[in-house]
Each structure stands twice: as C-alpha cells, then as structure tokens.
Length: 67
Image (cartoon, rainbow, N blue to C red; front, side, top):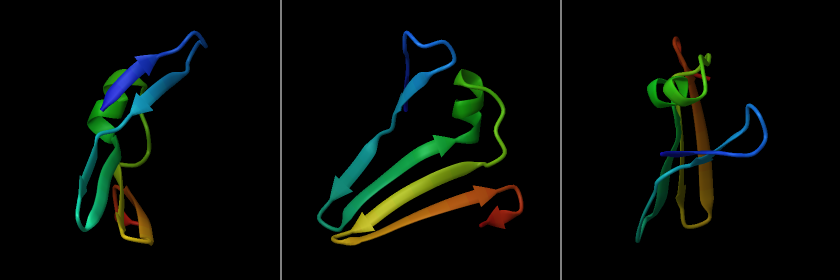
C-alpha cells in the first residue's frame, strides 16, 4: 500500500494494491502493521475486499476473529 500525505493535517491518502484476474479482484485495504507505522494504532488487524463478477464482499477482522 502507498500512504500519500495530504495538505490537511492528520489526513493521509491510502492507495491499496488491487489484484485482478478473470475471477474478479482482491484488495487488502488495511493491514494493522502497515497502518500503525504510517497512521497510528487501530483496533482491527486487517481488512480485505474481493469480488467475483457482480458479487462483492467485505470482511473485517479484530483480534478475536471475524466480525
């Protein structure tokens, strides 16, 4: 992921990597270790997005597991 600073104090643009193939796409939008280094402490571990043609899903995971 790329963390791009902005002119607004405390605001950063996060540009995730998108992996696309014939089945759809996968995005790891947040990862605690990376996010913590650039932004600060957070309460979830990582977040993924994927889609298969028109079906879309978002999973949020905290320390205990998926919500």
